[in-house]
Length: 78
Image 1 (cartoon, helix red, strand yellow):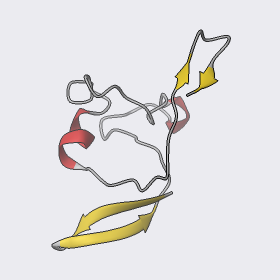
Image 2 (cartoon, helix red, strand yellow):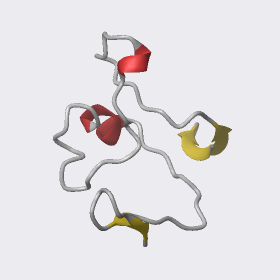
Image 3 (cartoon, helix red, strand yellow):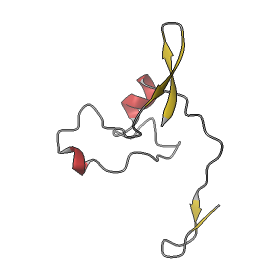
Image 4 (tube, one colour):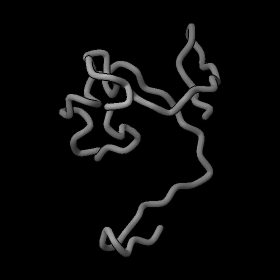
């Protein structure tokens, strides 16, 4: 996926793999929990996201998004 990062006083478009592995993670990479979704009210206190939120931000160009709603067995995109 493409992201935009700060680079030498400007911005640079980079192609990356969407996956966050915290620097403190010691287990196997296959054991990393899902890290593509976090609540805004906990992103600055959650150990999994805290450092990345404070120090390694980027812009993710997107044309839209959706969230799943409903019961886990009967979810629909909204």
